[in-house]
Every structure is written in C-alpha cells, then in structure tokens.
Length: 69
Image (cartoon, rainbow, N blue to C red):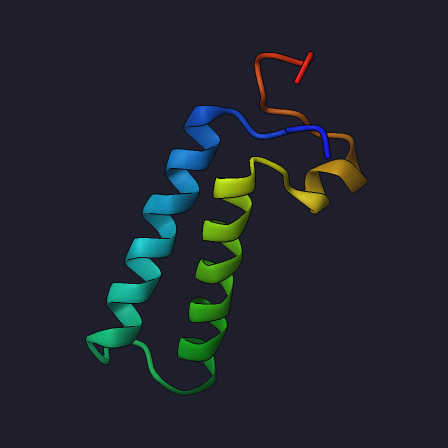
C-alpha cells in the first residue's frame, strides 16, 4: 500500500479519535451514536498508524507530501 495521508491529516484523525473516545467513555454520547463514534475513532486510529486511507484511494485524494512512498 502506498501512503496517501500526510502528517497533518494523521494528527487530526488521532485527535478526533481521542475526542470520540472521551465522549463515549464519559457517557456524553451513548447508544447507537456512541458505538458509531467509537468505531469511527478506531478506523481513524488504524488509518493514521498505517498512513493509508482506502476512501482517499477511491476518490483519488492524496494528502501525503512525499509521493515516492
């Protein structure tokens, strides 16, 4: 897999995942919406660590500044 996510994008995704987790575990968001946020946060963490977003590939996006990776 060729990386298609730049550092700012990865940092924003990790920050969003942390916010989602805090909202869920503090009970601010519960039920179905809480589960959706938790799953989305997990996907954000996974794609941030890998540096590849399948959705970006589908739509032809690339936020990675180094295209030789």
